[in-house]
Image (tube, rainbow, N blue to C red; front, side, top):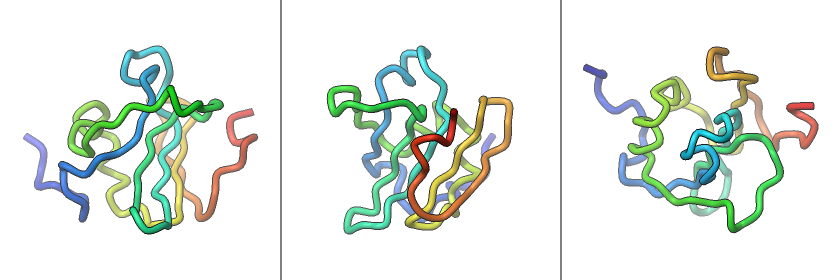
Length: 103
């Protein structure tokens, strides 16, 4: 059984991910914790995103989908984390991810 909820945000917080990630057609490789009024989390694949690709889930559903996200619970606002594949550890950085991060 997992330990207590590690995020300061509620499990019910709405987050943004991509349909292709949830369907298993793309790898979750990029997490952003936005530094704006809504303190949003985004769970992305590092590829170009159109608004129509977005899916809204709860933070709890995302952590259930990928338990490795628990390690990002303390990711500060205005930061992002990335990895090259699901078997790799998450790397962290401040600011906006570079479009060439996965080139």
